[in-house]
Figure 1 (cartoon, one colour):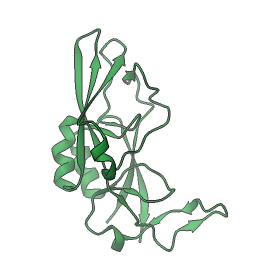
Figure 2 (cartoon, helix red, strand yellow):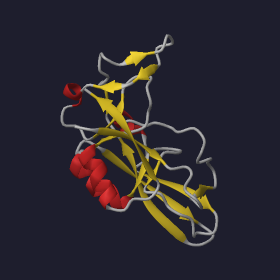
Figure 3 (cartoon, one colour):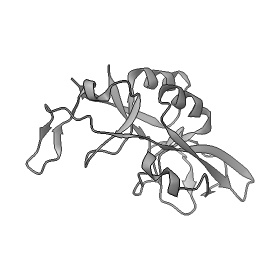
Figure 4 (cartoon, rainbow, N blue to C red):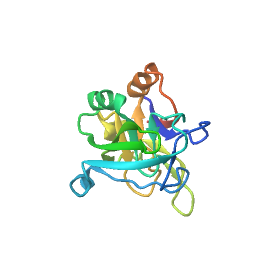
Length: 173
C-alpha cells in the first residue's frame, strides 16, 4: 500500500489568520496519550474580515481537520481521538468548527532507512508489516511529525474536494 505525509498548504492565498498565533510558526504535537489533559472544546479567535479561505487541515498551532471530515477520518482510523476546536471571527459573528485530531504514534521505520551521520533520515522507508492496517499515524521518534495517511484515505479526502492539504509520498517496503 502507498502512504503520504499530509501537510497544510501554508501558501493558500487569503488563508485564515489567528489573532493570537502565527500560522506559519511552530506546531504543537498532541498525541492520544495527551487526551486526558486537553480540554474537550477549545476556542481560538481569528483576525481578518471573515472572507478568508478555510483549509480543511490546519497544522498550527495543533493538528486540526474541518468538522466535515471527522466521520471520514473516524471510518478509516477508529482509534483517533477528537477534541472540538471552534474558530471565531468575533467582530463578524462567524464561527468555524474543526476537530483537533489526536493521532497514534507508531514505530514503523524500516531497517532499510538510510541515515546521515547525525542520524537524521536521508532516505526514509516505512515497513508495511509494522504499519499493519493503520490508515493514519505519526512516526515515533525524532522524525517528521506530519501525519501519514494511506492511499485509500488520501483518495477519500480528495473526493471531498479538500482545500489546503498537500500530499507527499513516503517510500514503503
